[in-house]
Each structure stands twice: as C-alpha cells, then as structure tokens.
Image (cartoon, rainbow, N blue to C red):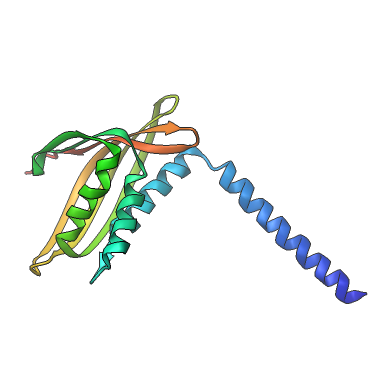
Length: 168
C-alpha cells in the first residue's frame, strides 16, 4: 500500500515538472526566444579540432534554418553586402567554417528592441576567437545590428549588419 502511494507521488511529481517545463517553453517571452537563437548560433558556429563533414553539414543546416528568406548580410570589413536566399546560407556557413581548425563565438551586451509587431532589432557585441587551418590565431570583436522577423512563433534573421566602429 505504501509502495503504491510512493509510486503515485513520484508519477505526479514527474508529470507536474513536465507540465511546468511545457508551459515555460510555450509561454517563453519573445526576448528569451531571441536570446536563445543567439546562444544556438554561437554553439553551432563553434568548433574544436577535426570535425566530420556530416557534423559540419548538420551544424550549417541548423544555422541556415534560423534565417528568413531572403536575408541581407552586410560586413564592410570583408566587402560583403548582399542578399542571400535561405537555401544558400548553409553552403556559405560550411565554407567559412572550413577555413578554421578552431572557432569560438560568444555574444555579449545583447539589446533587443521591438519597433513594431513581429520585428525585433538586436544590437550586440560578437567575440570571435579562431585558428586558421594554417595555424594563425585570429581574435575579432564586432558590433552587430540584426533585424529578426517573427514567423508563427519563431524568430528568423532577415538582416545582419556589422557596424563599423571608429578607431582612435
């Protein structure tokens, strides 16, 4: 009898925790969902040592899935100013990642504005530490402005711009 009650209590507790997690995920704020996008991109873009091509392709596809169709990308320091189709993003991600043996990406100072319904403007600082295949270390810090659009319940990047900061 006591054994059955303990099982019932444990089952109820597990169901209660699962219910709370589902509610938290379902009612997560737009700001939290957007921050989660950046965390995911940082994790998927990062790599350490040798990486199997299939793993690289899966990571690139997951990153590509976070973009709207089309997406405008502007990176003046690399002479990039172009609109990309969603289907082309994974190939560009794979090409960029293949040049490095190690990559670490982190985003800080994330500031999110909602200028209108379904649109978010995000400014942040991106820190990238990488090692070229040749062995040369790279450290870059960029100020970035992103615009995301909400499609159903998910947020997708529709414009990314690396902001040129004046040097002293």
